[in-house]
Amino acid sequence: GIVFIGVYTLCNQVTHLRGDAGRAVFDWERAIPFVPWTILPYLSLIGFFALSFLVRRQRAQLDCHVAAVAINLWLSATCYLLMPLRFNFERPMPDGVWGLLFALLGAADLPYNRAPSLHISVLLIVWLRLSPLWAGWKKAAFGIWFVLIALSVLTTYQHHVIDVPTGVLVGAASVALARRTRRLRFALHDSRLACGHVVCRHPGRKGAFPTA
Image 1 (cartoon, rainbow, N blue to C red):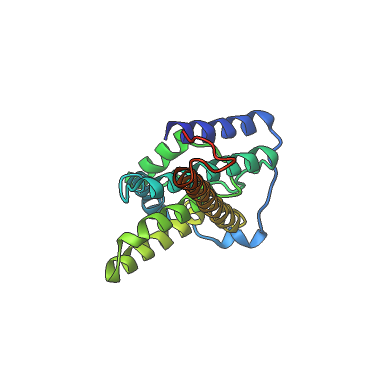
Image 2 (image 1 turned 120 degrees about the vertical axis):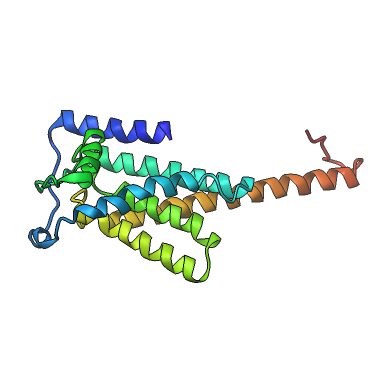
């Protein structure tokens, strides 16, 4: 968690100091409404993200999840540094509890680190991690909530539209790379076991060697 926050914050600060962030926004995006209460589903991803490390704690599954999160972070950070973008709309400041939540968000964030949306890529990774735990109406309910989280990146004026599909692509690529790495590691482990089995069964065979 500390590494995640540190890398994200560093990329934000570097882009802020560079002052060369680009613009990638469609004119029709101004029709997207600002919906203050969607800050709630937006911030709820933090809880789901933490939960994703506390369930299904079988070593192989947890290692794969951690690898996907790490790959996603580094792919996203690379994009932020190579292609810096900023959010281009002025966000209204609502009153009441929603205003307080937006103030807290604004104190910890800057209008950079846009494409790919880290919120969207992490949302995908977390959904793939948690969704097998749910079934029936619970899966449907959480699915609706996760859709709200995805929409909230637009209605809280945190991201532009182009950030959403790029976030999906980076998230999917991160999961695919993590799973491929896991399969390769298992294959290497199995081949070492098979080699050791041959040596144990035929200790005198020419070319046999001791194993650790």
